[in-house]
Amino acid sequence: MDGVARVEQELKKYQHPLLEFSARNENGRLELVIDLKNKPADIHTYYLEIHPRDLENRQFPWMLQRMIFDGLHDYFVEMFVYTPQSIDNPDAPV
Image (cartoon, rainbow, N blue to C red):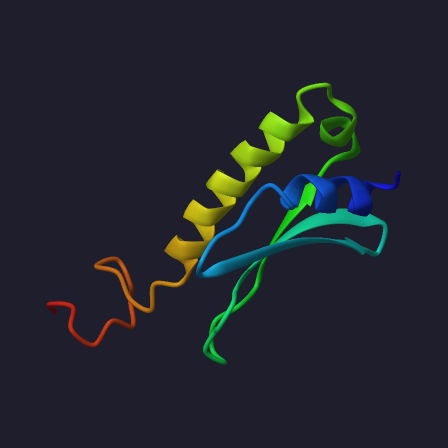
């Protein structure tokens, strides 16, 4: 079983009402793909590289779960349009 098929097999264990998960091979790199099911045009797709050593690890199912949860955190944080630290935040105090 190749890497994409192995990840896809594990991803069948996950179901989310807002998100969809998949895997792809991008230029020889295995990536976990996290995307919103009904996403606005200005929201990006999140890609997270899965290293071959992780895929070969006996604990891969648990490692993948950790990657998904960490990736979700990063994905949603990246969706902020502004934060208090944003230089271009029109509502930030001067």
